[in-house]
Length: 121
Image 1 (cartoon, one colour):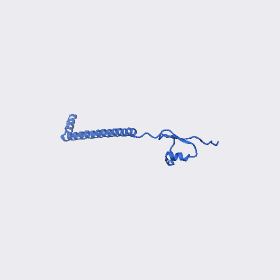
Image 2 (spheres, helix red, strand yellow):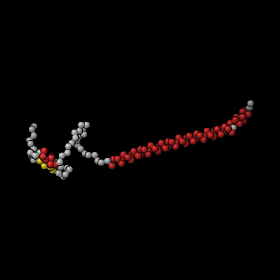
Image 3 (cartoon, rainbow, N blue to C red):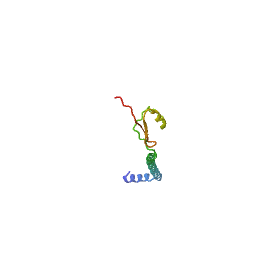
Image 4 (cartoon, rainbow, N blue to C red):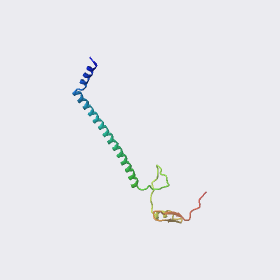
């Protein structure tokens, strides 16, 4: 068979109508699959960015709405004893034999011992 006959026969086989439909369907399916993958990537990236933004927003709002931490010089321990609150009269009654005074505004008062006993050193 001559080369030209082979080429003509090959063109006839490859130009078949059914083969062209298979190629078109395969190409369409491949393009559709790539579009679905791209759409999923875009949706996933958008979801991650939205979640990060929501987390950042929640953190900022929590810090703005949280009351300021009480400033204390004491270091909390695991076995911190419970504090029993007493009123001014009971506090002064504990030091009835000594001269004491409560100095300062209500809520910020300090107990001052006026006649402190000499310390033993």
